[in-house]
Length: 516
Image (tube, rainbow, N blue to C red):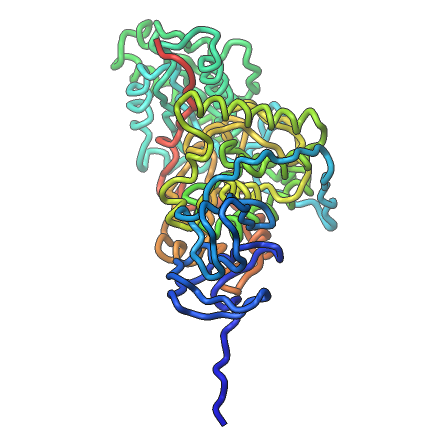
């Protein structure tokens, strides 16, 4: 008797995320001609589908929506048959308006049982708690950038090894500060970002360096700023101080005066409710919304349950999924503020001859993402399930507890700069293709979305979420691993980005408006 060959189950090569989805996500390279059995019937793969890409498991007519995560990720630009590779050649943008509801799916994570969790942090006189103890050299204008770097360079290498409680001296330089239209949105944004860094709890010593004739003078970065009494603050103006060499000498002297004071500051226990977690993703792939991002969402919910603050950002990368966030808003006002920022972005990109669907990037598409709708649905998973307590503009200090949102671009250094300005004392950065970002003065934990990237870039990654696809871990277990890693890093453990001394060059404030 001839045996009938068994057709393997589709689950061996692909993940179906929701029962009503039209596509599955491959977990390995799938060759053309391979046959599998799915819940909807047989699937014969019509052409090779790379790992992390989409395989059609239902037929879709041209013009119809294609669903993943139970949501539309675009419309078929031509008929899609079962077994087709679904990507840029047959899937386009879905321009249909999304229905917005407010406060209909609010969830408050249950208060945790057991003893209060603590981290070891630096208590500041204003009540905030830092996770690092840096001296920051903040430049008022690009003209003082080289001077600031020269000062910081004097404290590189082994110079500070004898000071256990001084994490370093960093030059926070940028390309603006002059040529701005006074009172404009761009000028205010730059000023707000710089002032927020000046007040950051991870900067215990502050040296502001200006040129002297700029539109944002050094004094304007401190005027009226309510800095804690224990923050060491100095100001130098190159033109008044006798030039670059004289200013470098004076800057080195000022930093040397600060170092012994910072060394007396000791880490002390603080409840994890005092943590502010920034969340970002970059170099995303087809697994980002399945592994690392939802796992980070679990960690975010755990922190919120303990009374902490978490910040989601990247407005262009929530476009298409904003309706999921407005439902979680604590009020219609909060939800509408998010929608107002989305509308601003539509106008902003249109004025530059583009659209919000210019994103995903070529690297995202190579990793399996096709439209901004698909990317956004995976990106918002970083925010977990907690209610959305507030929406902030770029670089604005975040004061609300719980899960919050900040309006930033999707470009990683600019986005993270805004989040840190908002007060993030730890950042978790998820990546599928592989990111090498750091963000001084805040430590950055990098989480790989798949095991292949983690293994290939093991010296640049802190955690691997790829086990969720490999079957060796769950979203919940990786989320708790991220949660524990956040507490450890907040207490002084150095993630890879700090071991490599990354983060000074990634200070990139968002620049808007005319330069005259």
